[in-house]
Image (cartoon, each protein chain N blue to C red):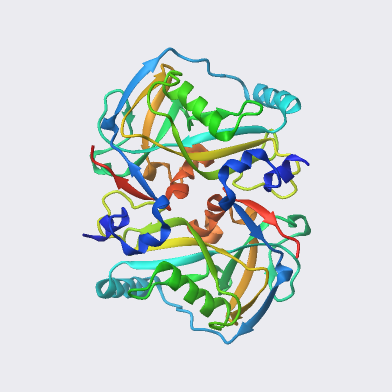
Length: 231
Length: 231
């Protein structure tokens, strides 16, 4: 066994102190079915319009609470899915992203309804955005631990992975949760979204393309040993 | 209660789903005593010398395994400690760093001895670097969860928060562990090291000054609610 095998958690004694929760089973893309459904409306608004909408919502409902899913799998060729990949990236973990309008990358997720919990909201969003709202069909989404939290202190400011000093009334809070995939699942995605599998090595330190949240996901996942399960 | 108070974990219902482990008690610096001891040797070598040393060590012992401590506290004025701070950063979490030669910032930690576990090594390093090796005196270091792991695929390459594709024999692995401080402790630091308390907002996205590992710590800590304990 070489060091790289040890790194994936197969018997490296230094890994044992992390406990079992640090081992993440990931499955090849060939375990999943990918299809599409009708387009869903996507807000194509100006920055000024967005700020106005956020201010109105803040006045009505208070801070915007959002959740987002971090879903990891291993690469494989799959015709319905755009794998941003080369053959050499075999067994390198990939993150599931949704792409809109060729330049906007998003983690699956969205905004909490009043009274809704983080977990309830994330399950609802995953069902509506990744499986055509087929409640009760297919396995339940397994929501894991919270990996990170980002804060927006003002309507027109950047996001930060902490509450910036003197922020009494933050305007938005986004929580990232690990979502574990079952051994098989159907993904049904609206036609105006592309489902991408992007290797962690392409996301890391690539704030310019993916924004601060997505480009930081490799760090948030770094504590896990990936256990690549053969189907 | 405003949103910012909710953000620190004092009663925000959205936080409860994270479980108790996501709440981190932090104490003001006034709880701690800071002193100094004799200087310890610091390797002041050229890059070429460093690579030669790493190669010799790799041939003798295999991959270099290192551990580092993430220690958080709240700011307060303390004469023996350089607090890089303004009054406005009151109640903003700070990270403990060691500074050598004015420009090198380090998390406390170091290299595992053969056969040593991560936790054993980190306790040994914290005792030798932060409390003058006073084993058995003062409270035991409480090592928490692993927050992140960084890999160096080659002797002269950068560090990455994942094992880069096709890396069969990585040369170094650095694991970051959360270390929880007790309500009081003596810190005794070698004279040629400065102990710093640097606010998270100064570290974030500041790779140029602090390097990739330290500048990424705010993200790794973002999932925690900080509970500021009054002494």
